[in-house]
Length: 466
Image (cartoon, rainbow, N blue to C red):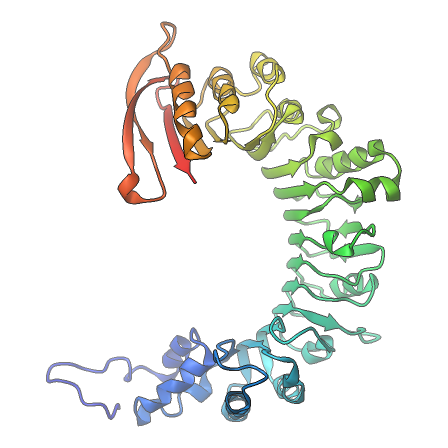
């Protein structure tokens, strides 16, 4: 029991818990904080060394290459913890390397960590400069299910390796040694389910992902990190369910995505490189249309790219799509013709409004819409609100987010008021529109007449954001 005395009638219930429960509680703390509990009482003195988590991310503020005393003290602390922690199976091993001259220590720490079994490994070299290490050797044959590497130079893989338990991989600002690494890595992880790869470099001409079990793939800024060189993205993942690409436009080679249910495609312009490497702009938008059409089975999609590279008439029908976030432009209105089951639509940007949306409305393509959100930043875009109200005859909720300077706010509100004037052909109902500002003290309400379409559930919410 605890050595700490408590007032009459009060009991130290926490110290009376079983060691297993206490270790579970301490596993949510950084290791440095968990070790500090040893001073609470004799009961707590040896609890910390059974905690199945080693989390060394709480680096002292005064720990830097010029402060030898703090550095030596912290390195001794890590050595002590690695020596005295008795947990053979670790749920998580995390370390944030803090400076270049940790070199003499971090090799020995990682070697010591090799002797254990893990669920998750998270190594971050952001503060210490990129380091090379054969991480495959560290986790070879282990039960590791999650691997996170940040700012690491990955050496050549062994001639043969097998990672039977690895399910989730995060690579952030990792420098690979050639294009074959990712292909070999993914093909040797038989139950791999999720990959996040962000701002990584070292690929030659192609980025490969090849996995029969992969369900989620997120790619962010690997083309933009190629510094003007072309980089082909090749994906072979037949049961992929989620795909996110947030990067500059490139050339894509994608096998069937028949199981894909959600896609997030933010394809930024990289026109000079594309034309130089792949020929004409026609080839460019043909390939982007090819990628988007590969995702035609999705139920939810976010699409953001330049309409210059897209041709809505060449896209497939998105027969399952119910939620779409997109930029309002000419291409968008062509895309809406391909979404017969769309229920929720978000216009994240309004770039162009023309007669195409009126044609879409007349053809009835927006009649199934229930929820629409529009982001406006100038008064010229207000016309889109009027078009949506006319086209979406079964609309239940319209949210308008005003992302504009305060000087434009009043003009947009006046324009919205003219749109929301009661019409004799529509049922009229007074509702309160809440204008939400950043500060609660600035919150105010405004009574405006709201035109209701035949649906009696229409609610219009206007949100002012800064």
